Length: 303
Image (tube, rainbow, N blue to C red; front, top):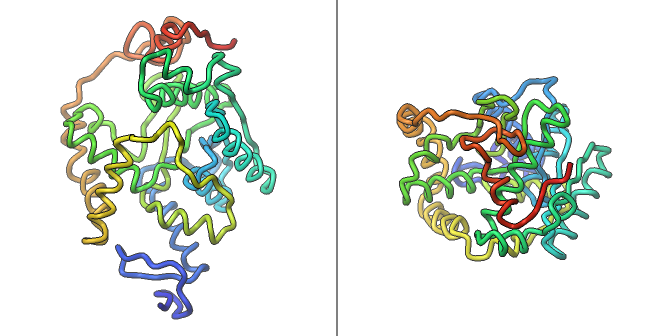
């Protein structure tokens, strides 16, 4: 197998592009895909202050690494979810990554903030673990970005993630979610920070290859709380389709962005966004979903 660019020995095959690359040209391809995503969707500009949500997994560490290498001012935010040994190991990966690169890292613990870890939150709130966890993370992402004066929050969502989310939303005809699914979520209200997904053009396998070739040490196992999540089943189905038809995931998601999303976006109802009466963060209700969850479990946000 030869590199498509130089004819040397290839180390990463990319079937959907009918290509293969040596390490040097794979890094070039990877950065080009990230830069294309940033420019096409105007995610951020040189000089913007970027907060990268890092979990210790391959995707978030890869996007932080590539943004640093490309010269962006990118700081990390790690949220300790209080999931036993899993959180402990993932935190160690993130701390090591930041130390090796001399990168700025913010660390927040939900147990210190709210007095409960994710398993206890889910049990007391009567919600699926991923739902309770997601509410906490979204709240803390936005709060920490506001406190730190960041222009944008970056997450490591990749093509597999986006295609699986799209499949789930179509199967259930979640019209509101289809209208909002995008590589960029603009700041549509005061005290709401823009979010961006620079890896949406790259697959999980490509990102894993990047981490291996760059020597990025990441936590391999899935979060134990995600067992049985529908998104994992959707990814499995899409991977089977990809084997039969390389590029299917890209055609599915990119086609939606170009031809499908504009129709859903045009029909989306306009809702009034106001400050939460408890925490002040943007919400469409008098009290935001996060504060309502805190009230149900008998927890209070740290000052």
